[in-house]
Image 1 (cartoon, rainbow, N blue to C red):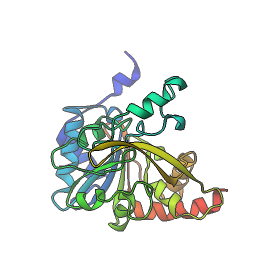
Image 2: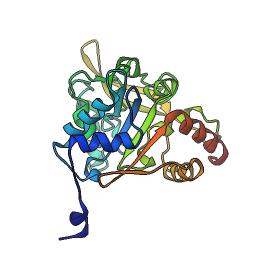
Image 3: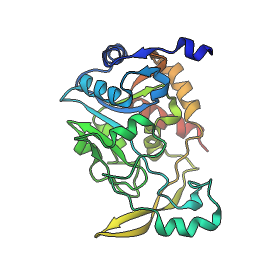
Image 4: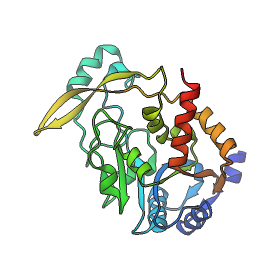
Length: 267
């Protein structure tokens, strides 16, 4: 028996509620959640239990949001189908299913986000590759009018969370999963900022179309470094729930700090 199995804990819905409340999660908050279910330990009921616990805590006045990206619905030339031979790329472009927010599964977002996207009452944004899903008081506001080109900038779901003075909850994941840093990228003024064309399959007037759009070319290569510096400079509390490290961060403070960091450090 390895040490990981020896130290693994079991968590009930009540355990999660109590643990997350101790981290600062509270009624009425608007929270962007990034989570690794596996890192928590053994959660009785799995992803369903986590979602119910989060909804219970924030209550009717709060909102839970999660990334439900479908980045395989991008041009294969971008590297999203790296495991497939290049001679298949034209076939993929011509046949990849158009994004359907009621059907298309999240890709690589984890078990909790995948279930959350299909949760009764959840609203999901219309972006074919970078969607988010939200549940609660501000779900409609956060997910509505997710612009094809302005994915993470002004009036995007991430920016709307900023305007609500919302929170980021990292459960068992690091700052490399922190989508809100992309908002800082759109705001910050640095010389290396670039734009690129992306393409996705979209339904337009009932017909599948392969649509190309121009958007900012985002870069997460320095997110871990930024997170480490932010933790230290802002003295961020790192809590534990089960086996997972947990951070609850005011998004507005983080985005403002990261914007200044990028302007100073990105070339």
